[in-house]
Structures are given as C-alpha cells and as structure tokens.
Image (cartoon, rainbow, N blue to C red):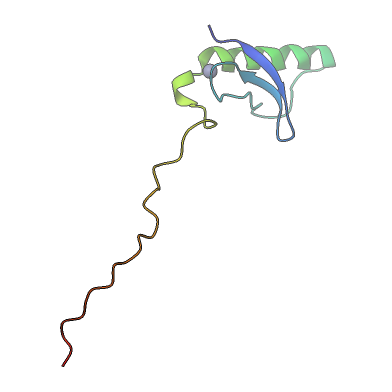
Length: 85
Ligand SMILES: [Zn+2]
C-alpha cells in the first residue's frame, strides 16, 4: 500500500509517494487568513493530490537500466581493396 512520506535530499525536500516518483507540488502560495488556516489548506491540497495521483503515471526513474547501448563503434574490418589498378 502506498503511503505519503517525507523525503529530504539535496535536491528536494517535501512530501512524496513511497511507491512512485510522485511529489507534492503546491500549485501556489498557501491561502488562508491565518497560519493555521494555511496549514490546513496546505494539508488538504496535499492529501487530495496524493489521493488522486496514479502511481503508474509517475514511474520511478532510478534503477531503470539504460537502453542496451553495447553496440559501440564496432571496429571496422578493412576490406581488402580489390580495385587496385
Ligand atoms: Zn504513487
């Protein structure tokens, strides 16, 4: 079961999903007449966003193997030139 988790890293600090790459992005500055109201509004929006997001739409990028790129420049086998005159 997915859960909302608090993550903290060099790049990001905030709420994220435990099962996918979803993170909470507030759509704007907090609204409300008081800090209490802003906090409530923030949490409401956060919970709504979390509840409505689809994990499948936020696939994790880490751990995904890069496409097989093993075909590096193959050494060209020089053709024996037969067109010598
Ligand atoms: Zn998710």
